[in-house]
Length: 172
Image (cartoon, rainbow, N blue to C red; front, side, top):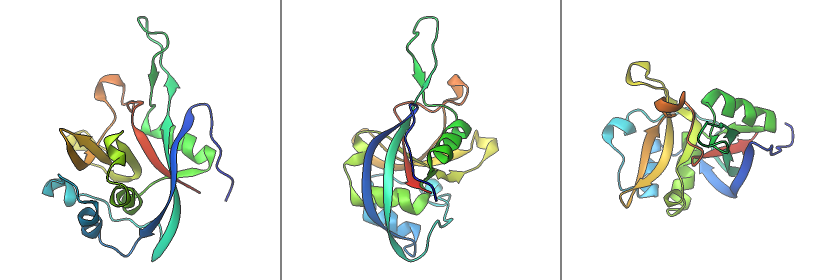
């Protein structure tokens, strides 16, 4: 287990220590989060893979990933990068993406946080190629409603994540 380090493309937005209960069913986390919208279609697809057992206090960080993406009209443009690039950068920096329990623990702990930015868990993937996936579980907010949703990189920008997205990560 190496020490986590930040790089020029990886910036810390916020860090927290949260109790993650890996024994709590996903539905329990959805109730604790008091979300305004979690479609049944999504509930059935939230990955239940565990990255721990019992109850554990976890150091969870919210990070942004930025890469230069200059265009003719905007030489200072940035992108969030592809999923593969982001995951490789995270591993190299000593992090792993959050899974479903860890991501939902953030929403259950702080009901206001996802109002600031979408929070993505890249270890909580629903892979459905026929629907344009893979999709990552995310805590989102729009139209005054807190949501648990599946989102994906923008198809219009070569599957690059929007740089406004924040990724939940944990030290390796």
